[in-house]
Image (cartoon, rainbow, N blue to C red; front, side, top):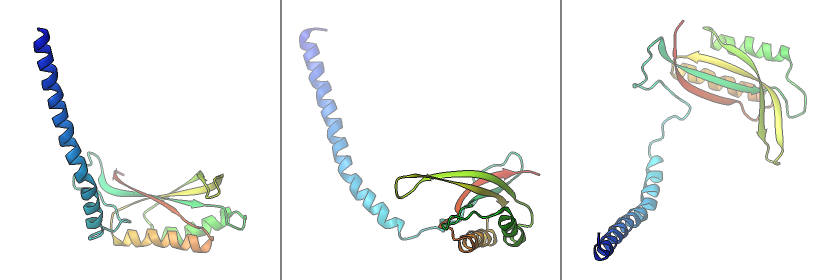
Length: 169
């Protein structure tokens, strides 16, 4: 390639690159408008954020599509007293079991988080694992458990994690 050809090639490449960047710049100007539009439209129809259901594309090679909900219950009261094993078992017997008669699992857990004061907080907890079909009844029962526990034991929150799963017995 001669020096002249190389110079021509470089100019053409530079024009092409400038053209691409200019198109990108024009596209980038549209992004804020698209973001604002999307945010405005997202308020028009919001699904119930507390409900999860197996997706139609979820194929279970073994078992049936269901929902796994795990609830995390802290065992320290704000006053400093600990929720006893007997108090926890009474909560399970009187509140959880009547709502989820088909079964449940409970695990000991150790939670930690960064408090508003910037200090690391640690707390012994219980994890309650529920496998259930999606629907209003399960949703109502789960939210009742969270609400009752927070009120009964002066808790700020009960963490909830939902995931679609395939279940076989």
